[in-house]
Length: 173
Image (cartoon, rainbow, N blue to C red; front, side):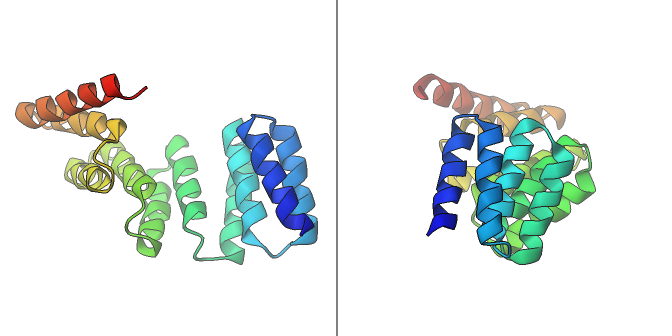
């Protein structure tokens, strides 16, 4: 299957930060499978890594149009909208991803970031706590949780979360 080979090749190039070659490989996969959401999604990720948000948005939206249950594409949209400061759009994208898969760490982490940016700290706390339920040793969730507690003046919660973050940071190579 040549399309799958081009997909794999594109992923390998992307992991090596050879983005031009990755884009070429995914475009070859698209020629063979124009109605598949995966090559569009992968193109979107490469464009995102390049900071080309307009192309990334287009590719991820095409991916969703071809496979509306493609949870990772919604997460990608959420990440882009978050970076662009479009928090309502980010919230909608992450919420859709959460409806499709309520146990995905990256979705809850993204929701936590959006809630925090919007000043909705209770939502941020709930999202980061959900991340920690899914992956107790995820240091960034503990750090961000501490930051939210600090904003709320909850010193005890902040100290506990920061202590856990520091412990994880020391043990994570």
